[in-house]
Image (cartoon, rainbow, N blue to C red; front, side):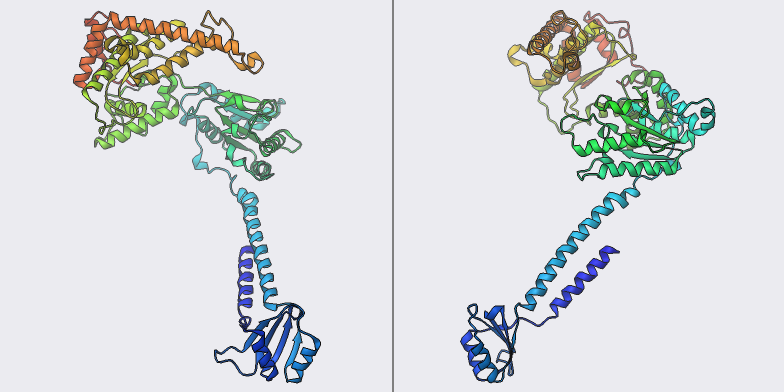
Length: 598
């Protein structure tokens, strides 16, 4: 309404000014003086202290102009001139300013004030009224139950107390117990933290207000704190209810850290006050999710605020099976798909990644005009997710194909010997995404602790491609194909030295900055670099020796790759055994099972 009023007044003012008389015809003073002497001027206005004369003619000029003006030097008109013109029959008026110019100035001022008003009105709408419509309770149809969330058994058990309190708070109050005021869900991305919050609300039968940490970050002073107050007020109106803030590290980050503005700190202070201040929050449970727990301010986690931390880790094999079964209810699976085997082979996959895998497999099945998802569809979806779509337009020369085949065969042979804990899946030299080839190894089971020999085996396996290039092509012909392998090997070696205490040169000292008062000395960093270099050199020598020892197996696998582009584990195992490569019980004599996904 205010905007419409401003527009109407502005248009009316413009029309008023536009309806005023047009500008007079400008002529030299001598011509105007002649007209005055001849009595042809009916009225004469003397403006700007005698510096401008504007007259209305009794008879219009040939061009139709009836109003004329002339400019004189300031104060050039005297009283005698006025008397003379009056005696000639002209009505003389004296004014101090130009009415047209004055009206124009008033219009400009009004337009400026109108623009300021409109801008202020827009900011007012964004900061207050619009935010009043943002923090609304989520519709009941968007809520879930715990049966809809697979895995996370420990997290569900921790959240059971919150559900029970929201359902029957009197039972807890009778013994003096209170509900946790805040619940912080911590875990890697995609583990189901948001789903758990929705499930808690659905199980308890209470509304949930969802917000994001970025909803409160604004450049205008006081806007973020105002939004926190709006959120808290709406939560108290809806109580009992749940307030869920996703990506909480954007709001609850550590105060005083570099690049953090004062407005962000004011917003966090307001949140802390709303959670545990003088205002009542009975029946309001604050929940937040983050995968950056190290970034949070210490005051956030003290009792009275987020006093319960619920870990939501990556799912175990049993959890993955449960998650796959939930998603499989919406997707018809073929008889050749073994979900238990798939759960065992998807080590390290989050719930979101498992859902994405089945969704991509469903898309592949649709493209094949199939009504069910089969094992080959899941296999194709896995390859697409990990490596990308096959780049059919890439033309690889015969020399490059041979080099890639030798490189990947080196990974396969060294991996079979140096890292027998991981099961080989297949080797390919198909160009996919950014990769021209890959050797796929899959852990057979969840691993929580990593022995030194296992980590060294991974490093040797990563360096197996470069070792094969050295043995077959020579040092002068090694290529850039080992770039990503070196990144992986160096990362693992540095963690072994700096975090796990697996180097005699560095010893049991940790490279965590908090253990060194905030920064590492140059001498200590130099010792770490030296130890990492020594570890990489040792594993490179080991990989090169294995390639030389089983050079026939590397050549045979490379020839098979050149012939077929993709060689599955069963054929690689057969070639390896034929050339004397020792295989672990995991790999020896195995055939491809119903479904293998790394």
